[in-house]
Image 1 (tube, rainbow, N blue to C red):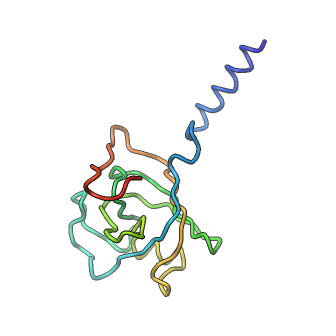
Image 2 (cartoon, one colour; image 1 turned 90 degrees about the vertical axis):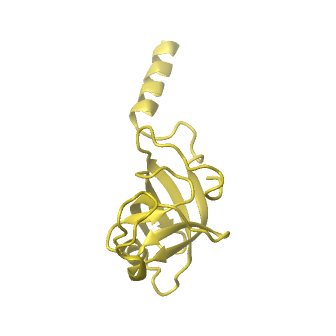
Image 3 (cartoon, rainbow, N blue to C red; image 1 turned 180 degrees about the horizontal axis):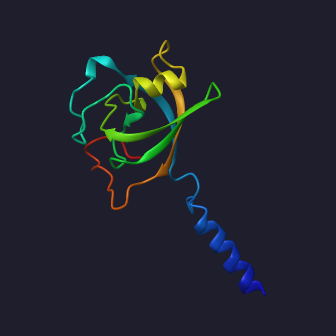
Length: 136
């Protein structure tokens, strides 16, 4: 009977799609945003930057990773897809597109404290090398 309970619990955890080790795919820090002046420029992933898309730059996460960015001083969050590298400022952990910044209500402040939580990594996606940015 005890083995059945363990099996059911393990199956429930695996089926939920949640990380087996909570907290490893989360970080808190400052977020900034980039907008219209970068529109049309090529991102590190090769895509053209569109400030109206829900995208973000992260120093290490694989391109295509989906993350939830939650503003800690407000009840606002947004899901973005990593398609660029950055930010290259020591005290920041993510740069979001202007559309994401609007959803987070951070346009006026420019920089806010957020929690970044990995929701989905692309299959076979590898993190950027340590030389590209800070360790995640």
